[in-house]
Each structure stands twice: as C-alpha cells, then as structure tokens.
Length: 263
Image 1: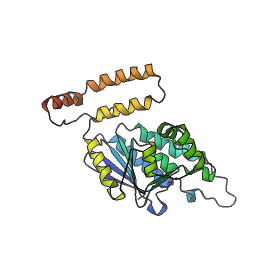
Image 2: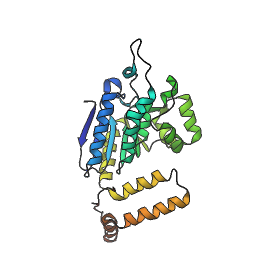
Image 3: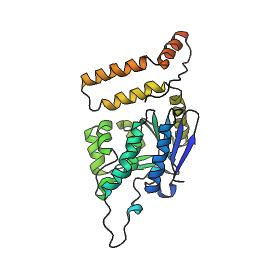
Image 4: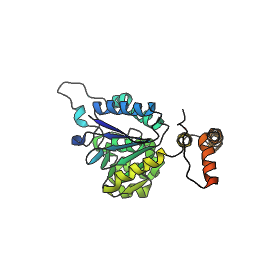
C-alpha cells in the first residue's frame, strides 16, 4: 500500500509509504493520497490530520523513474501532472476545515517540500532537510512553492531557495519561519501525536474559521479583512464552543469543546 491510514481518537494519520523510493510521488501514490484526504474530508469525527512519511524520508518529490520514456515516445509534459494530480491534491489539503500537521521525518524535496509546507503546522526532526530542488533539473518550483515560500520566509530567502536549490537544515527552517518547530528525531512522532491530540480537543469550529480568515488575508486589504473578521467572529460567537469556553473560564476548569467543523 502506497499510503497508510490510522484512525486515532479525534484525528487521523496519513503516512506516505514508498520508503524504497523515499516516498516519491508516482501515480499510485497520488491516487491513494486523494482517496485518503477525501475520506478525512467526509469524516465529521476527524478533528485534525497528521501527515508523515515512512522510513527515512518525508517525500523526495516527483519520482523521475515514473516519467522515464522509451525511445520514440513523446516527451512527457510536466505541467500535465500538475493539472491532473498535484494541484487538486493541494487544494483538497488546504480546503480541509481542520488543522493539518506535517511531521517531516527526513528529506522533503521538490514537490515533497511544498506538499509539507501546505500543512497548517510543520514539525521536523532534527535530521530533516528541505530543498526546492526544481532548478537542479530545469524546472520551476510548483505545488504551491512560489506561493508559500515568499509568504513564509520573505522574498529574499524565497528567491535564494528557488534559484540556488540549496539544502536547508531543519534548524535553518525553524529560524527562518519556514516551519513551526524542530524536535529530536526520536521525539518527533510523539510530539506530533501530542499536538494532534491537543488539536482534536480544541474548538474545531473556531479553528476552521481561523484557517479561512488567514487564507483570505493573503489577498484582502485591511478593510476587507476587518469585515471578514467581523462576519466570522459572529459565527464563532454563536457556537456552543464559545459558550462552553466562557463557562469553563468562569468555573476555572478545562473546557470540553464539541462543536463540529465549519462547512
């Protein structure tokens, strides 16, 4: 199986499972990932998602062996795989109304790097690396790379990563703001699971609205963003989770949030 799924209490784990190819993308992996993320989207009981890789890599990007051609065959068109597989996959992941955590357990290169960066929170093992490898083979960063990089690390570092294709260590990635936090390799998964357990008990409805607001802020001007905050806060303020949060605060106890994710 190219993708493993594990249902935990309140959250789900998706593991890319082609360790012999460093979890590189090929058609079966794409198809399995689409199916797995569709299942998460359809499962109202799933309040968080954790994505990681099997073996010593998170994902090494596109499996170039999958694009090898026999003599006389037409040249493969890299753009076609974006339209058919990568772009819909990225949209499905970003559209999930629940927190998505990526646990980068090794190399995250090319499309694999940008797939990780599409998560809401990225954790990395100390030995993990990130590399926008596209320039090494004559391509441009895709799978959202040219969108995420300047917003995460600024234009100067984004251009350096994209044009030089240098390997970035996990510590660098944390210092630059590319990812959330670095953990020792042997603690990465326990920390990732602990985070998802925490998120699964959080106010899912409000977190989904928060994701919506943050995504909109990329293109909104201040007035439009203030208006959106007003509209979304009205929704959050009318939820059972808000009422529970206030009661718990006044009663000096931990809240028990039960609201479902936003539509």
